[in-house]
Image (spheres, rainbow, N blue to C red):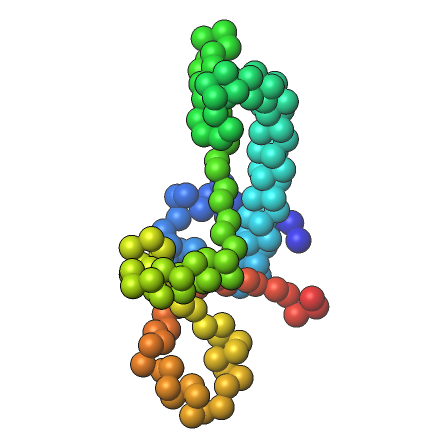
Length: 160
């Protein structure tokens, strides 16, 4: 649906107050949200292409520099015609939870406190919690706090 000539477009939203935006007709809010989502997707595609090009240009040089510094991850800096390229290769570590639980048990059985060595977290799946019998849920209720996140609104037309 194209915008009418006298209606605000995405570029006009910066000059409108939140109240002015809230007062726009629903069909215009729908059009603006669809336009914003399309623009976001377009910018993400452009950024992904740009980052891929930068990676192609500097990937080998930064990997060589990282290797020369004896690193397998982390941040390195190289220079290209007066532009400093800062390349970060984050370290991603995962731990086998079953193995860690066994280690925690061994530490505890030897008389030491496993929390001196491990961060221990307990979680309950909301899906499982909801499926439990009422008596079981009551036993866990004191340990459960429910909060909400930021509201998200998605507009659709009736024909969708």
